[in-house]
Structures are given as C-alpha cells and as structure tokens.
Length: 439
Image (cartoon, helix red, strand yellow):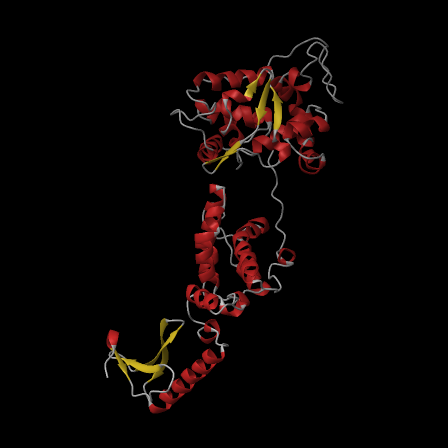
C-alpha cells in the first residue's frame, strides 16, 4: 500500500501503535507515528528484513506504551534529533529540555550561541576577535565533539598545536598569553552551555593555565637617543611629529588615534579614549590610563603641527587626511626601522623609551606612574627600571630634547631634577631639540 511522500506502508495489525514504512527508493525501514498531533517519521537505518521489522515493531510498541503512561521522553528516544525539535517536544511534555553533556555537540551549540548570545556583545572588536578564533581554530578542532569529550587533556593538546600563521614568527608556537586569549571564546561557550542546561560538571579549564609552559618574557626595547634620531630621519615627514608625540608623552598609537581638539585644555592634554580595531572606545585600557599630560614646549611644537593640518575633529591624521590608525602606522614604523638598519622594534618601544628616558634624567618614579597611567610603582621598577643603566651617556641629549619644563612644569626659573644633578647652571633654559621636518 502506497502512502504520501513515496512511503510504502507494510502490513500492520490495526491495534498496533504507529506504523513501519519503507521509502520507495531505499531498503531502510522507517517508523511513522503521531505525538501531540505532530507526525514523526524517522529512519531506523535498518534494512527491510523480517528480523529487523520485528525489532522496529518492538521499539514502536515501547514508545506507544510509554506515551500511554505519560512517561515518554522524545529527547531520550531520539538523541539525534535537532535541538529545536527536542526543545519543542520537551515543552509539550511539560518538562524542561536538559540534555546531558555527552548528547550535545559543541559545534551545534556554538552555532546557536553565535546567533543568540554573540550579537549581544557591545564591542565590535571583541566580536571580531571571538569570531576569528572560533572560525579559524576552535570549531575545526571541536565542532564534532560533545561537551563530555572536551576535557582538560584535550584542551592542553589543542594548545600544543597553536602556532603563528603569519609574520616573522610563522610556524612558531604561540606565547602562553596568546594561547590563553584564544581559549576565551571556547570557555565562554562552555560556561554558557553549563548555565543553559544546568550542568554541574567539572570545567576542563580548571588549572589549565598552570599546565601551559611559561614563555620567556620578551625584552622591552628602549631606543638609544642617536638611534631615535636616525629612525626619524628615515620616517616619512608626515609621521615624524606623531612619532615624537609618542616618545615625548608615553602615549600609544591607539590613544593618539582618538585624540580630538576638545581634548586640549589649556596646558594639558586630556586622555579619555582610544581607537582600536575600527572602534572608538570611551574608556582606556584601565582607569589609570585616563590621565592628563602637561604640554611642554617640546610637545607644543609637535602638537601645533598636528592641529594646523587637521581638517576634522581628530588631530592625528594620515597624509591623505583620513583618520590615523595604529595598524597602518605599524607598517610605516617598520619601514623606517628597516630603512635605518636598526634592530626590530615596534611603535610601543616609544612608550618603553619614554619611561626609561624619564628615569634616566631623574624624573620621580611616583610622577612617572601618573604620566604612564599605571596603578603603582611596580611596573616602573620591575619593567622599566632595568633600562636606565645603559642610557646614562644619553642624559644630556634627552634633557635637551624633553626640555626643563618636563622635569618641573611650574618651576621654570629654578628647576628641580628629582634626585638627578645635571650640572647645568641654574637659570639657563636649555633649548628643545626638534627634528627638522625637511632635509
């Protein structure tokens, strides 16, 4: 007897629950029954033989018996059904759908998570980083695994495969902190699934960070003064005052990118925001990074250049007049470093150098904490303090470059050098060093 959709119904006694069918184009047996008024057709993956037909009949009878007693659970009977179907029928049964971890594939849950939870993240840069990590690394490894299979050992094995895919370190293992950061979206999905299904299971992320080998701290490069001049000579004319603002203030590229005319107030620059990965953030890296920078004569000269050529609200622009971006500047910076024949260094080296140069000319470490936007003296002593020793011979050049008003902004007639004696005669104002913008 032929039924709808090309199904052939096998002969069944009228009193039996449901029916066993076979598609016209296959020899596999299917079950067909109604549950809460909804038709359910499922393949058994069993060939059409008398023995298999009896197995399927027994299965159907058990379903009918459980439905009659009110104890049938769709999700348990059909673990391979979609999460949507399981949730739908579980609600009809008057229960909450709570599958066990070994019933849920990470890839399936991650797909739904990307549709529902992911869009709620307010930060575009955060969404981009999460999506990239999920698509490029996490899903290829875990999408066919259940949450039960994702163990601490499995995560550690995954971190061992993490290598740089581009740049000078291509093929090299990622740093410890980079590995931890790539696991953040995986952990977010894991925690959300546990909360959604109310799983009380041990997290595979517990103590994982202790297993990851510590990577050797990269040496923070501090630029010697004569190397800085050589670098500026090889840097495009448009970018010289920008680079000098960095080494004169300790500001980084993302802070300069968000700098507006309204942030200049009298003798101070107010740093309140940054521009990272195409997104303007109204907060900086931490609350301490929100700070005021006194505008010395040296800073004023570079700042005036930026103000004069700015055509819009943002002070730092590209030669085309478009918004300055740290990612583009990194390429410009590297080109100048290579052209000058200097050791590899990034624009962040200007911030390190600002700290080291300041300590070398005797700036009080407590003052430097505020200038850098740190929480305490720890970073000053532990990170930057080590670099003062090699710069002693550059002291006079740095003092001349920064200017006396950097040491003591309000006491130009009688500067106090906070524990450092320059040997300069009192009252003599040293000229600020300014790299000419044309050669």
